[in-house]
Length: 97
Image 1 (spheres, one colour):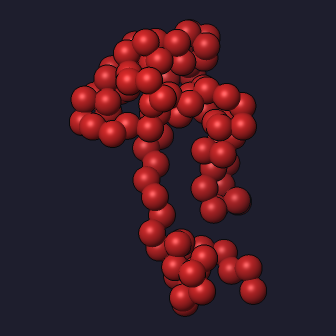
Image 2 (cartoon, rainbow, N blue to C red):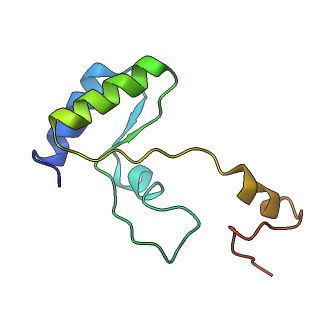
């Protein structure tokens, strides 16, 4: 559970990270609320950090820790990209067929 207001967490991240690295708009953060595993529990994040360096990651984790906020790392899902290019879909991706 986040100890402080989500807006305070987002503001701290925006202050510490490069311009454009922190997404806070409703439409932006909702896109990151869950991945293709529609069946899994999820929550809309207070902010999304688009880290481009190790320093960005360290800063994000430190600020999240100071706010008692969880950090959920995400990376591109290359396995699921195969389905979108009509290659055989691995079992981790739902099929649209």
